[in-house]
Length: 173
Image (cartoon, rainbow, N blue to C red; front, side, top):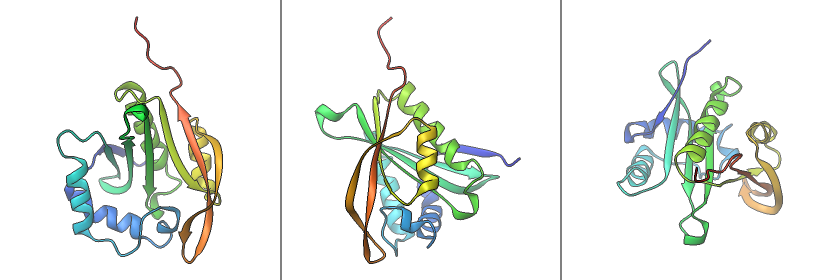
């Protein structure tokens, strides 16, 4: 069985982000735009990993090769500091091999045990059945449907709003 390693991303992972998110079979399920570059991702990763930033960017390596990434982005508004938005992408060749599950487990563990996150939110296109099944396995539920949510390859598509509440919120002992 291949070894999956989860770690925090670095600027050296920029090319892997471009390769994974630019794949024409992966890109249509993301809110990314085509024609990104190493420079763009290097800057994003630099900005998001700067001191004081609370975003978490993880990558998954399969036998030493980066094949997935996930981000947890806390809400900036004071009254929504308990919530964070999730984004995830897995390389085509690594789908169905446990990479998405490993990233989701790491994100949920971080949110539940370290980041004081009560609510993880995401949007997923209604036709992305594989991703929906993954999210539901981790306790996410559909909260609504956004009609005409995003333009994808020249057509407006719907998405589900999904969220997961902390299964056992911390309390003072």
